[in-house]
Image (cartoon, rainbow, N blue to C red; front, side, top):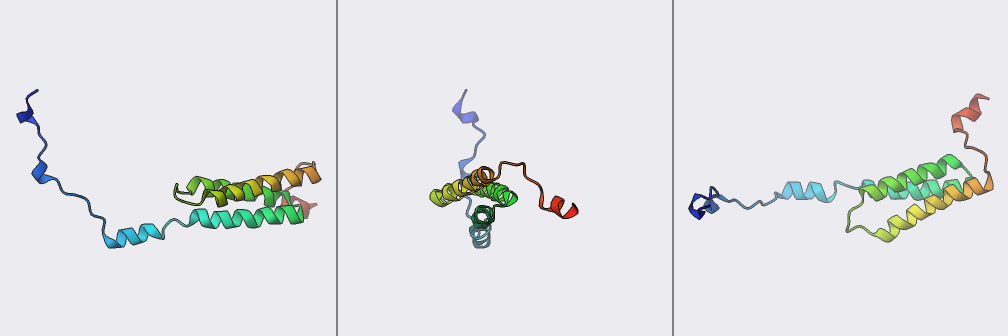
Length: 110
């Protein structure tokens, strides 16, 4: 191949510069991991204190969402502690009562 047949034109290159409005939208845009982390801790404490299995499972679900949506730069210790707290809520609720979980709306029907 001949280097003179290179179709790229370096004089036509334009470097990308993000606008101010888009960088501000990205900075405060993704607060889902924080909200899910807080919800996971609240539900896991409710699951542990009130022995509600569905609260423990919701806490585990929220912790998984928080972990999946977290960035590399986020605090991994807080996310990991929320995840472990929700797992312990599920384990402790089933150790206290090994019966299968009944949904909250099923007990109101009977």
